[in-house]
Length: 319
Length: 319
Image 1 (tube, rainbow over the protein chains, first blue to last red):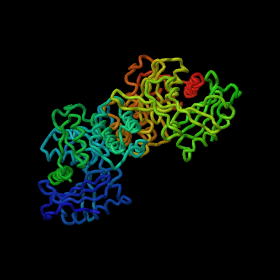
Image 2: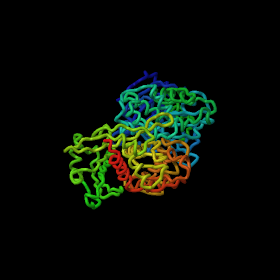
Image 3: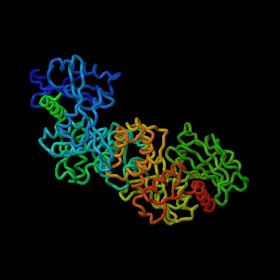
Image 4: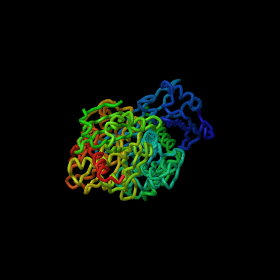
């Protein structure tokens, strides 16, 4: 179930245990005093995979030995584990929010043998039209990334099932928006007529970029979608290219809505991309096609964010 | 299987048999000399429901008695029956196209006992960016509707699984665009996280109109979709209203892209809506919310279009 990816150092070097526990994955880090990652454990044990809500049992099995080996260090959890569907709910905290605000809103969680852990809250924000938006887990990655990169202001994009675009200013997440890009793509390619003309295992970079280009034409996403079908009928888009083209269409619509014109409200800052390497590469390509500069964020953003929260716990001592 | 909705006149009054045979439904009309509908038969015998491609057997069962009773009148079929998945393919005809063009491109189909029927072609068009689009069946409804209404210029909308927006000028379909609105809505509400917060059987007109309004905000459709989820989490959109709101969002995005600004390239013509009465009512409400005038098209548009094609056959005599 677990996969110890990084060899551990001495247990006396360990300053905190950080756990990023999402819907589909579990990642645990042994963190050094300087925020370095001493050891990582990954498991396909997202909260959706935990039987009967026995999060404590799963936690013991996944990192019980780490808890025993470091009885006095802070333990911080972030992600969907703190949602209504998780172990215990840590209510959403409204933006703007810095690390100190997240730390102050953490919810204590009593573990076996008298041990205590802390659950990070998610973040909420409202659009100019007062429509709510939420994230849970990404805020820790975002604040970890800007700390690691040493920047106070940034625009970040975390592509995925529900892509997040966030703006950081003066070290605080000041606002963000979610785009249902990955999930809509899956629903469209698996559950509409488009699926019949898509060879799902195939990929083609040029077709992906054609989809990005097409997303800028008039007519809207719903019209562009049908074009995948029509082009297939006319032999102008073959099944081996259709999936990548559709991906480009959907991602292109996200990027044009979220990133706006080159420069935009970002000034000249490149967009910082955080996520699964394949997706980060794709989004980088797509942004480049739109003339928007981007850079890869640090790979250990979540661990860094968890370390920052843990540090507040050790220093604050209010709990 | 069939449902004889209208009582027939004398068989000597019958000038043509017209059949609108789509993916999910079958409608047959006995047509009078003036284009009036003397009798209608409806069956849930769309081409998808026909076993082993036995279209001839199904056709005999559905209207064999009508064929026998009127041995000398033209028989015209339109819709997906003329597609690659249908009985025989009638290739797409490129816009612009008038009734005479459609009639000249019809494909003869030999029936049992030496009888011959004619399959109407579908239409194709290309956007300004040369991306293809297609329709099959709607063109007959469109040309029937403008004939019935006595207009030479019109903008028409046929809402549905794949909504069609068409422009008619000088009695010709000059161009059109398809929006995958109905199918995308079904995929999103059945196969994404949004389904969990939707009470599918419920409806709420005010929520539908809120969705129409929201579709005009910045952020794009993919962002607006996630808002349904976030508003649900905050108790600002309850399950009984979520489905109608989502419907308004998706339809709103179609309308803003397709109908454009009030007036637009339509001049002051109201949009003519053709389709299932419930959908026509909804689209009329939605267009009104956007300040775009609309009117219901004639209910017998398909029959009228089929009659016009049959008349060309009788008069042309080239086949």
